[in-house]
Length: 183
Image (cartoon, rainbow, N blue to C red; front, side, top):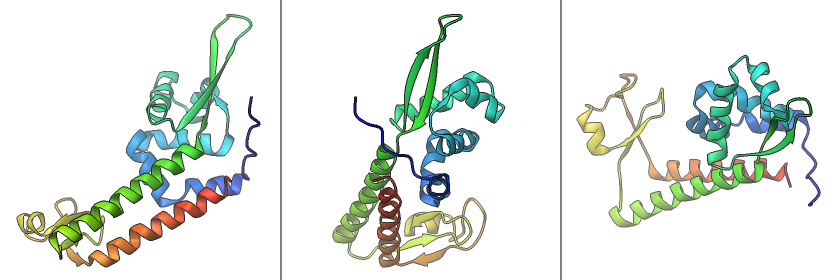
C-alpha cells in the first residue's frame, strides 16, 4: 500500500477552502447546504460519517447525500471499518485534493479554449457583465434584457474579451499555486 501524503497545515487547508474558485466549484456540486460538510472535511481530514453528521447537526442521510454527490465526481475517498459490537460498516471520508485540482484546472482550461475558439471564429464578440452578481451574457441576450441584469436589475457593462481571458489565466495560476501546497 502506498504511503499517505503528509497533510498540509490547517491554516493552508483553510486558505485553499476559502479560495473563491474552489468555493464556487464545490458549491455547484453540493449546494450551499453542503458547504458546511465540505469545510469540515477540509479541516479534519478523515472523518467518519456519523461524527460528521453530529458536527454539522444534520441527519446522517443528508450528510451521506452530500458525500455521494462529492463521490460522484471522485472528490472524496472513503475507507470502511467494521464495528465490533453490531458488525455494521462505518465509513470515513476525506477530500481527494489531487482530483479537486485536476477538475478545477480542466474547467479553467476548457473555458479558455472555448473563449479563444469563439474569438477566432467570430472575430470580436461583445460580452456584457453585471457589476453586482457578475452574470455574463452576449450582445443578443443583453439586448433581450434591455441591457439590465435579469437577476438584480442592475445596468450591464461591456467587458473586453482580453480582460476575461486574463481573469481565466489568473484563476488557473491561482489554482496551480494552491496545488503546489499539496505536492
